[in-house]
Structures are given as C-alpha cells and as structure tokens.
Image (cartoon, rainbow, N blue to C red):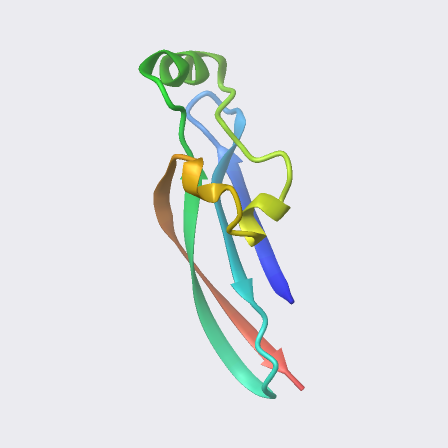
Length: 92
C-alpha cells in the first residue's frame, strides 16, 4: 500500500493551487517509522503556457492521483522539486 499526498495552498492572487505531490509506501513492520517524502509539481512545457497559467491562476496539475503513485508515463512529464514532507507511521 501507498499514501499519495496532494498539497494545496493559496498563491499570490489568493487562488488555491497545487504546492506539491508525493507518494510513499506504508511500512509493514510493526513499530514507529518516519519517512521523508520528496514533493514535486508539474510544470508547463512552454514559456507561453507558463505565462498564461500565471495570469489565469490555473497551473498544471494531475487529474488522477494514480499518476503520482505509479511511475508509468511520468518520464515524459516535466516536474520541479518542491520541498519535503515528513510523515510518521505507527504500525501495529
């Protein structure tokens, strides 16, 4: 099993935009586990698309969270690193 994170927050204009996506496998072993998840955001492929998305407040985002969990097809997607999220699991 995996946990997929989609983090959203306001931009300069107050629009709710994606701040990052990330995924991590849930550990099977009992105990306390701390995982750091590298977050990323999709980017526009051209300068015109970047400018248009900045003006309209509509930035690129994934419509299906399975894209984040699966590696399939992501090699053609342009993304940018966007920080880290730390998650703590208590497995019994």
